[in-house]
Amino acid sequence: MAVVRVTGRDGVERMLDAANGSQLMDTLRDANTGIDGTCGGMMSCGTCHVYVDPAWGDKLPPKSDDEQMMLDAIGELVEVRPNSRLSCQIQVSAALEGLELEIAPPV
Ligand code: FES
Image (cartoon, rainbow, N blue to C red; front, top):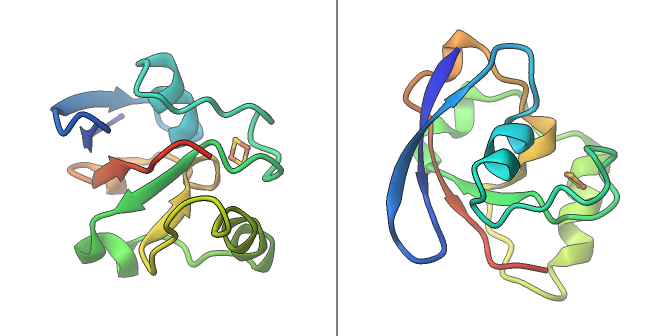
């Protein structure tokens, strides 16, 4: 398990417990943070978009080409930043303990 610090669209911070081996998207969706995860983690909706604290950028696996393509696609609708990630592509492990992120605007 990892405890992650999540800043919602309302600016309120919450600490959430994420289960090892799960997609981070699942935790964010189940906690009603505004993350929909409409496609169930298939990288085809972009509704799991988050901004990861830049300090964590090097500690996460790099974006795949497919993840970047989805981010490029939603970039026409919302602000996509260098620290943008699809939370369905972040697998939870103990190494994520203390991860900080912000929920991106809805697409
Ligand atoms: S849940 Fe659809 S792209 Fe992540």
